[in-house]
Length: 275
Ligand code: AMP
Ligand code: FE
Ligand code: FE
Ligand code: ZN
Image (cartoon, rainbow, N blue to C red; front, side):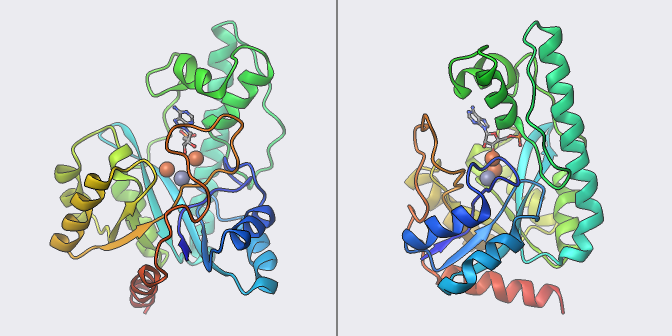
């Protein structure tokens, strides 16, 4: 079984790569992608942990970009880590600056928080800010932190530093990675049918069709669009680790029971890119 969308403690997941691998093995996963937000530093630990189990690790990333002034996530599979290192460093530093700006805004609003020490190769995100708000007693759940402060229109929200989806797609391709639009129906800056052709023009190669927050009818629409534009289809549980208060629609690793066959075309596409 295939799992192509997961986060670790290197971004906003709660399991270390090793813990994630162990859980994936228990859940029957045969190929597991590590797709942290803007960092690839979880791969090595995952690979080392997976090796004795014969679990295949698919190297990946989930790039944070902006499209129509809204957050858009682009997954990339099989990037050349050397080529990606410099540009990613800039993205990760941007995330550290952004987290600090959110802390400053919260302090101005009268809600001081302290973020835990975060190493330079780790990509901080809003969930870390939400946890700190909870730890400081300003909110009673992470969900409340998003609702009151750091949701997309919240008073302490800070957008990603400018990096367009087109730039993200181009960067991934330059690094030999297959660019895939992550969870299109979570995008808030436009209609899927109108946005997709623009992304295809920019070099997008596939769509994350299967995602816990997509309805069955949305998945059918995406399957048809992939057929129409000749795009790859992927999927995954967008796993962030066991949650203290699960959100509606959260599922466990391997919850989608995806066929390993989906991975073959992605691999082929990656091989063609780096030729
Ligand atoms: P960032 O990339 O730093 O803007 O953080 C985005 C991440 O925050 C997503 O990948 C989710 O893990 C999480 N997230 C976004 N919106 C919410 C929400 N309303 N409640 C809880 N978690 C959320
Ligand atoms: Fe996340
Ligand atoms: Fe995402
Ligand atoms: Zn994700």
